[in-house]
Image (tube, rainbow over all chains, first blue to last red; front, side):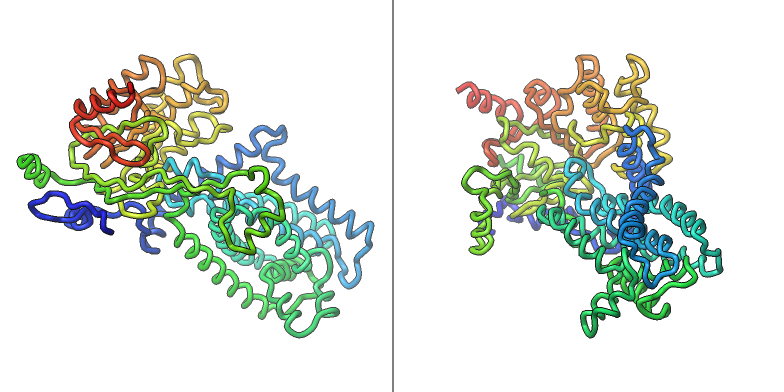
Length: 298
Length: 262
């Protein structure tokens, strides 16, 4: 840097040395991962109240208000039921197709809405980012919290549907909680990664609907998983069956329903789910943290 | 000059800006001719930068040292890079080249801090305070004071109405009140004094003086030469991203006035 100005001619210090001597820290320096996590923890109240604010402001002008949190998943399930259950009569292989379909639609919808909202978590809040100082990961995490709240309402609806279509309550229902928690962590990682991607390349937002569509068909949401084993083999089958959403959906179906065809044995599915949760949860967080100081640029 | 140098050597620097460059990247909607699918496909193949991505070099190498207890006014014509420089010092905008060092975390006190317009003023106060890093207990004890200071409740209970129903002056007052509720090491003030009516202006100037007492260093961006003259002993004149003058307020303002009148 040839232009580095020398001040205070007596000491002949460069500005950089002067800053170091007086213990000033560089603005825009990336904090260590541990410091960043600590900062983020101290902003937990901001994250939760921001999430609450988002829910209130998005539903604030509708007449039904918070009731939409329950209504949206219900309508969603009804639409898919009419198309795949009534019109196309795709019931082969699964006894309780309605419960099967709804579980898939709801679990998939959770991740889908997190990704869609996550893409805009940073790029849609540039005003806030340029005005105030807070760990930026607060924004995608708040969005994940909004979707978690929506999903809890959806889960209540789902449980009513599953019961109404004749599934008994068993001990296996207890597994719902760990599966849900794993998916929450997985989704948070996904939201963080999506937020950084969306802040760098605005074009990603245009591709998300297509990516989600492919993911939907690859996750055996609308038809039995056995379709994959019937039509695919070798590495293609591996690829499809390692799909994290397929794993989460399968596990949830296994927990909620008595007689379901699965892509693999439950133990394998559990191991896969844990691996995906750790990989995406930690990976997404680290990936977002690495970009922390560039988010204000837009 | 010799005595000022030894003087500045003894004083403690709080903000050091070392040859800082700030570049905005602006993605525009396409202009005719460059926006056809064929043209953008060609750009992707040849790897050239899209014509819609424009770079604005807002700060082009600025260096200075600010010391503890100083109040520095930033002046310059519109678009000269004053607000950008403040944001870079606050660490909200990254520098492309050079570096900015600061003691503690500088806080930017601006009038355009975005809040949620669908939410009532009261909840925005809570949200804003939490975003500045206050604990819920601190927020609770402050909310009332902040709303009272902003004076939005002078004409009835506005604090429970959504912010989109506020007049622009009321919104600006509330935002200023939120930002001024916290004590800061280095305080950056962006045109905040120019908001509201005469009564609120008096109150906010008093608040800034109080904040100055606690803060190590204050930077003030304002188009009002009077408020710079009143509050700052040193002024920096920025013009198209470069420092034109840096020195005692009276001298710099004289030069600046001569330049503007020309």
